[in-house]
Length: 253
Image (cartoon, rainbow, N blue to C red):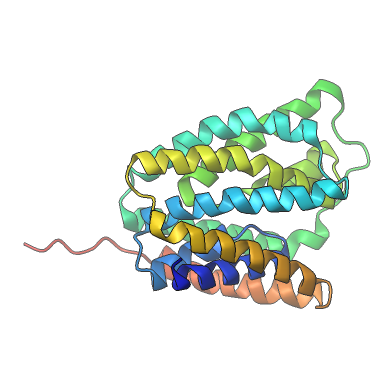
């Protein structure tokens, strides 16, 4: 087991557990920086980790009865299709452009952390068959982001499930964790077919993120949530500035 990947998994899992996010947005920059992986390989390897994060997280929420199984099943098909598209599109982009897209996604995640307490719970959400429409669309958007960027997509799915479908925040989070598993599987397999999966780092990342997420979840209840979200949002924006400014490598003649 590679020790560098183990501690990266621990850090990503701990940060994710502290603020209720998957570890992909932390693991991808760390893998690119310390394991010297290209953006494409970091994205591919992160998706394998996201599968196990989703499994462990969804199981935890399910034991507390905070998973909407029907909503997750409705998200699955569109997310799986678009995860394949996202992974294929990622492999068509030059590394600098993929980095820029990842950077802007980090900005979105940072803003969502800051705005999280202000997401209202809808008193009269969509009813009946109308609930299916936002679930299909959110699955499509989250799946594409997952395959493209190596993340779980919870930043997209959770607010929509709260605002339009009417799920409680914790139920939306548990459902999002379950829904990300199939899309991450499809995305990681697509990247694997393109030769981008750094298999030697997977065991350490998976063990690390599971341990880190567990530890982060335990500590999270003992720390002030506002400051946790604020600090993490600042770190994400700082990281995003490095990615948004990515430029093409000069051509050596």
